Image 1 (tube, rainbow, N blue to C red):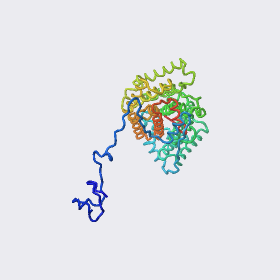
Image 2: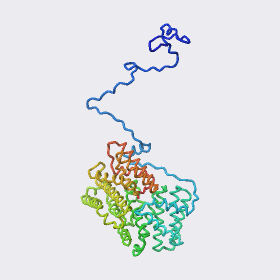
Image 3: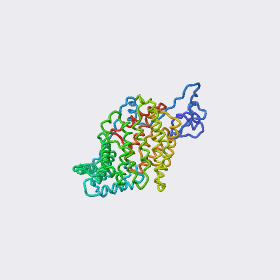
Image 4: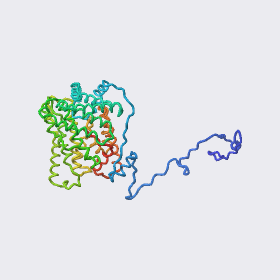
Length: 479
């Protein structure tokens, strides 16, 4: 041992060191002592040496941390090979003892707001469904009622025995009602049941390929069977045909990007549901038409007209002119909002609807610009549209339409924009309780991971959408 202060060697004697006594100093004892280096101690420096400075043109390497999962890395590796990842699906084995009255109350207060419609006021849509479900004691009315219970059950308890039982009862009621033919009123009830079962399948994430599309196909056929003179007589028909038209248009987007080449057998192109039918149904309405329906017509034409860059038609001048006309129609759309809204509609609901339609229109413009010009980078025009969209999202806080959320989620390259997107999705989930938002959030997180992994390299926009949307095991709905 050694006294560190005066460098006197300790002889280990007890109770005190003999060498300390001879030196006439107080012995420090034999306990634990901490020794701190002096300021100019070269052996034990308090601070390390300064890092070497970089000179010349040698670049400084900066490490970046990316929050990804194993699936993100696999998708990143396989993206160039157009391989599709599989998503896990779940089944809830529990059973519920909820009664029909409890499910109807739950549908009225919660599940109603998960339905993807173009209606500005969900309460009016609820009134239309209620009248169809309680029209009489026939099987067609029973089918609507059972389908409502199925939607409420799957949203409240997940995919389990009770929700499947209500779904099966609704389908059997439809079959029984159609045995001897149906009149126009019953046809509207069948349309309502089909669309409710479509919503059931979307929320249940069925393992079958595109079952919700089959219900949309059936609803389209039923609408064409209704006598033209009776299409304008009821608000119920108007609400149902607009509901089908919205899903019909948005389905075209899903089919363009989900596992390209594998969807030809699940979609029916023989019964188009054009905007003229919807406009016809709106003539007799006491209120102004929904603005969101008006933007669907040019958007549907965008989905039908766009071709891949590898297609020889892509560089055809007539094709370029048609894309330019579509852009002009969408770009001039805000000037028509005042014409679409009656003076009595200028309340908070209509004002919020106008902002949502503007967001929808901007999403259509961004999508058209990128796909029609094969543009993956930025441009002054895109920057204006994207910044306007994020300003709208900041003001409305919630957006019930999934298509704009996906399109601008693809454009969220900065943390500020991603925070706005996450806040919008969270607020929308709080207000609508939609289960689809969780799937959308998963897609956006996977997309952002790919963007971060790619760094400064721009991915092809069309292939990027194809790869991310194809992660879903079934055709996703962005309605």
